[in-house]
Image (cartoon, rainbow, N blue to C red; front, side, top):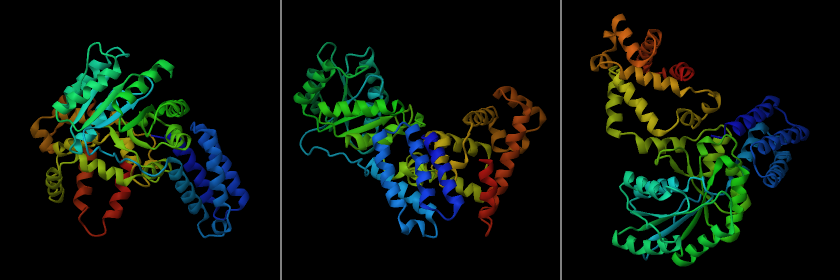
Length: 440
């Protein structure tokens, strides 16, 4: 996520740090590089100009230039201005006190509206709400069927009609929601390849008939400034009050995330960060700014862990580590837990000081590791020391790997067990971390 802009900005800040003393010329030269990095990231040019002007004005002050750590102060100024650019966190949802809360999702075709409906519904069920999905997109072939399949997967009701026009479908869904005791209605509306008057008229009619409490634009983050332009256009025609950015995990630039709030004045509410219905998170500008600047995002990492890690299993694992009883089955279980949390590369990027240092994490190697352990018998997973030459050949054939790869895994696991054994010893933690992190 945002690898391109993150790497460019970190390189620029390293130049600042390497100078020690900074002059006004050094700062202005550096800001020109920051400007180029932002433009390359597809950030709106007017937003870039305003951003650079504010950062430069604050950075060339005597308090910064004469300070002991001018480079760090400039980075802090950039971080603060980046947070201001994306706005304060606005992930709250005002729920109706009388009747169901209606959320209308709009956007261009291909932005991911239907999948986002399901992700939002999953998010709301975790908050103890009972959402209804409404299939009001009769324009795109199979959109209704897709929503029905997603609803079935989530065990949630879906309202649809075979021939009814979208405004009527949305209006009728209110009665259905009352029958099903749903407290939130999520409207999946039609999109187009580009904004046209027919689309807008349909959306306006839906808005007039059902009077949604929230109208959120679903925008594809990977389209950069096209997403910003469509957001601005939708905002002129409908009372837009929020944005959901999809495919943020595949966006290496960050132009949409850094521009939408400044251009439209509408907050980014949520972000889609993967294909699974659980790959959906609240958008926090302060955390996003930290990720972009390579400072990590430990709060989001902890939140992800809390939603996926089984506390009782974690306690059992802790006891096994302390007793030096960790086995390959435990290791496999932990790999599966990590996969539930998302991309390993993205998880490492959330750890302060680690993400920026690790550029090429090959997740295929983790799949090979999983295949190797799955090719072992129950006894071999629990007692790796019994794996002799003949067993290694059988495991290699079963996992589609080589004996050398089996040997490497067993050796690394043995080293890890030694490190885990020493973790409880006084004064060992620092040394362990210096050995363990390069292996990661």
